Amino acid sequence: MNDTSTLGSAVGRAELKSSQRRKLARLSEAAVWQPIAGSWRPLYGGFYDLGVSIETHDFQTETKLDWSRSFHPESLELCLNLSGDGAISHGDKTAEFKPLTAGFYKPGKHSLRAWREAGQRHQFITIEFSSGFLREHLAASDGALHPLVEKAAQGNRAAAGLSKIHRLTADQQQLVARLMSPPVFQGARDLWYRGKILELMAEFFFERQGSDELFCDRQKRTIRERVDRVIGILRNDLIHPPGLEEIGRAVGCSPFYLSRIFSKEMGMTIPQFLRQTRMERAAELLRSGKYNVTEAALEVGYNSLSHFSTAFHATFGCCPGLYPMVPNHAGLAGK
Image (tube, rainbow, N blue to C red; front, side, top):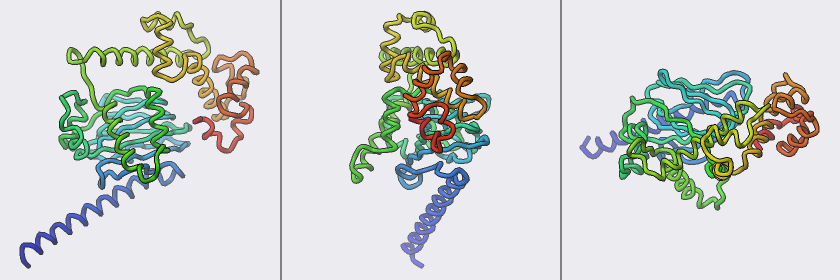
């Protein structure tokens, strides 16, 4: 056998081995979601073929789900969480994915523990990045990369870790919705998805801290932190939420300025957000079967059943008494 045929045979074996690895990875991930009907759907790309993949998940489980079994050990994964509570733990650090939040993580050699809570509707999108894809697109970055992204781009397979969890802005929520239904012709989707992947990398993978942080970045971070504090204050007491002036004092800015930045970041006013949060919580209580309509209304701060019913119908398109009996009520909750 000459050198050429030997080389061809070696390349052929390598390609076969790579193909088998891709097939096993797909089967392994499919096996995680297979018991939960309709829970997992690829949207774009392939981790081993293109170095990046986008997948959507939509399911409800009665028991706590081991989420870590779906991770690729050599990947960096970004999760855009729409609904349902999930968590990922690494050492003594835990990242909690609440509704409308995002964060990324690097599994490494099975170093992460992850789970999805029982009895909730889980909707989220994951984007998996290979080290080669990250290196190709981030090699020219000026040093502002998040340390975990930098390790992933360098091909450090053993490294594992978690980013901070960030709240999804109104613009990012709209982007997530478009990922599931691209507003372009079929032939343009490959180009469109590539552009959106780069946009997400630019939004989530860069971080400046301390004296290295630019003024404009510091200003954006301060706005996000204030809005996050408002959300935490409102969710902490749905029955007796504080007034706008009290919230403004708590976060350190005027009520007028706070209203403006909140509306810009969230795409809705503070009262609108409060009502939506109350209705989502009420829907969760009704789905549990442990609360009737009156009890659910009182739990979210409504003393008037008629006002509660009107707000609930405006949010979900049906009255609260019928909500648990609607076959696709989980789908209504996501509207």
